[in-house]
Length: 262
Length: 267
Image: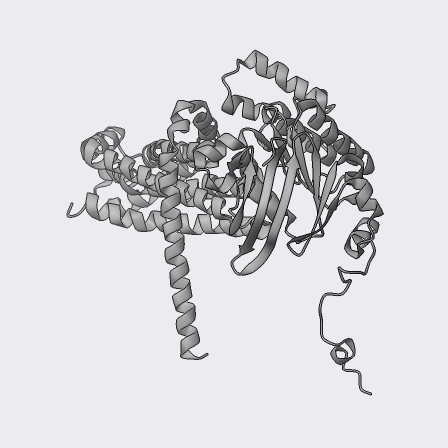
């Protein structure tokens, strides 16, 4: 392949990517500008909270429980070598609250609710429902997109918190009930190790950022999807891939700022 | 513009990138009439439809509705104008997450402060007008294609628009639904005192209900007239279109190199 052709391809892909990033940023700003309806008519947001938040409960509860149980098992095995099994409670809780809760809950949210948002909006566009709404003088960003955005942003920290709670419970079941770690030290070590502001609030902040990232990507991909079956399926795939990468990259950046040197 | 015309399309040119779609279109839609815009697939009629609805801007020329140039309106002005318009999309475009009742009530709830009891009565009246009052509790997925189109029609006229736009209202309907939708378009137009524009390629059904017809081919108006004039027309394009002839000004074959050459026939 001639060099000029390669350069041309690289150039056009770069321009496309920058253009798309700009379009996505503009889309995000439009969501914020047209968010009034989501709060004035909170019923619309509550409906979306149900479909993205409540409907994700089962996967979050079950996954959280099992992740906590695995942490209990693995943590015990490692801690036992150093004779510090009593620190199991703090290990399980810190891992969950700081990292695994926000990150895994966001990954699950992206695949469960994010993909559904993309597919729904993409299909609404493909079946001209979005155009119909515009022709009825109703702004689709305000009426359809913004309530879903806020529902995602509100439900993400709640789901992450629930994930962590279930994980701690799973760790307790395996560590204390099954293996026999001392119950008193399990809870007291956890209580003294976990700091509300440093650990819990930072974890909540992480999940808020992930919520914004996942829902923005999901809604943008749906809104921008070509109105065909292939277009919608491609957009759904991109939502899951891009959200997952965004979560992990953002997690690194946030962790670097929040927990450096301790 | 005469006081009797609601929509005026003047010297409209439009192209996607460098591909010309419409070229110097002039049309006038008088108040109270049902007008058909006809032409084969890809002739530019849907583009014209979008220009009238303000979804696209012409490269030159203008579309004036009720004295206002559509592409010069800002978003608020455009939305204000659209509240006076009703649009029926090709396959109805009903909101699939809402019941039939909620679909018809949608604009009333968005744009008015009417109490729920009045909305209830209005919605049932609109559904009754299209013969589907009994379906108000169903979801769009439970309706047949023809019924969905009629519910969409009820939703289109929910706020008694002055201008109703129909994009291929007859596409994919059985003969009974076809007649029902055709008759409803005429009756609702007359009952509301509205003006209707029907973009379609269904000649026979349109000729029964419309007052005036424009034929578009390759982005220009090639013929226009009342249904009687169109049926009596001896223009080759109109004859081919009205009678559904295979070959004529619209060729059967897509342009291709010499057939014998393509098949590598040797003399």
